[in-house]
Image (spheres, rainbow, N blue to C red):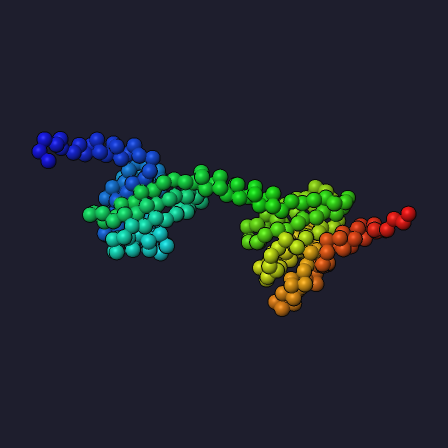
Length: 257
């Protein structure tokens, strides 16, 4: 349009460098055409080491990653993409980024948002919630109970073991009860986690009792060939408590009037 002032490229560059979001432009040959200050910080590389060089030269091996496959699809098929990227730096540090990839006339443009702090807070929150969901209860001197509820994965199983092992040391426990009545499915994965935890508990000198094993769970254990011979099992928590008391030299007696 006539009368429109010419684009001030210097001012434009200053504006892009002021963005909190990273902005980078890559050519079809994967050469960095432009990198703003935030993008350079996100990659922990000086801008002068990036601009003019290819992505593969700057980050060897990136062409074998899933993120590069996504960038390639955007470059070749001219379709946008949104993705999360967990980046590991050469020093072992990690960064989490939300990426928005768009095709452009020069190739593709990548907008990156650093969400490392937010992801760390989310992980800490999940850790706290899981720790609260696997409490350890001292039901009697030398006897601990850990009710298990919900689905177990590797991360939660690790937290379960760490919580219980710390409690054994703190309370000088001789018997540990895991109540599995709240676990929806007793499969090989759950059994593997429980047996690994039981082995660690025995190393500390405590006995292990699994309580709350339903008839359906017992059938699954037999069907899957899961070997629970190294731990004591009961169908009811009350029976497990009686067994635990006997292991510490106590017994339950009925009181008669």
